[in-house]
Each structure stands twice: as structure tokens, then as C-alpha cells.
Image (cartoon, rainbow, N blue to C red; front, side, top):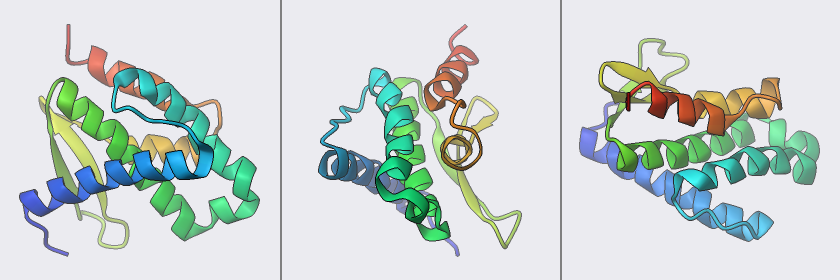
Length: 137
């Protein structure tokens, strides 16, 4: 799937907006696009499992949840210090999107996946904060 940088940027901005709208509809929680709101993302990711049980862990739901919240967090990172989205197709069976900044790649959707599927103690906010720390020293 070939996508221009402009198309990828548009897709990620739309996905972040989808996270804002869906979170408000589903949980009456307002994500305001600030770094502080990422703490709410940690809670909302787990709320999907509380509300929808096993359905939230089906492949298509996991993909959607992790990608919209990953886009949301990544867009905040971009607006805070910069970066650009990159679509990585090195594994044709599992392409993914990362945010690149200053020679580093940040898998915001991946950390959302870890919290949702593998370990509810993993914090998206901590990952975001560490990513910022790595670049603002």
C-alpha cells in the first residue's frame, strides 16, 4: 500500500480526531489534545475492555483502538516538539506506522497495544513522557 506523506499525515490527523470523538461518545471523556490528556488515554484504553469485554480484544477492535489512540498521542508529540509519520512496510504481513523525530522512532500505537493486550500496568503517558525527555534535554 503506497501512501504519500500528505495522505499519511491526513490519515493520522483523522485517526486522532476519531479518538477524540469516539472517547466522548463512548465514555463521556473529553480528550483536549494536550499532553496532560494522555493520562486519560491510559484509562480509556482499559475502559474498552471493561465496557466490551472480549469484543474489545478481537483483532479488528484491537487494531482500531490502538491506532486511533496511537495517532492521538503521536499528534500531540508532533505538535509539542515535531516529527513526521512513517509507514513501515518492512514486514509485509504486519505494516505499522511510527512517528520519527531526531533519528528515533516512536511506536505510539504499539505502546497502546501493550497496555490493552499484554500488561495493564504499562503506561502510555510514561512512554510519551520518556519520548519527550529523550528529545528535550
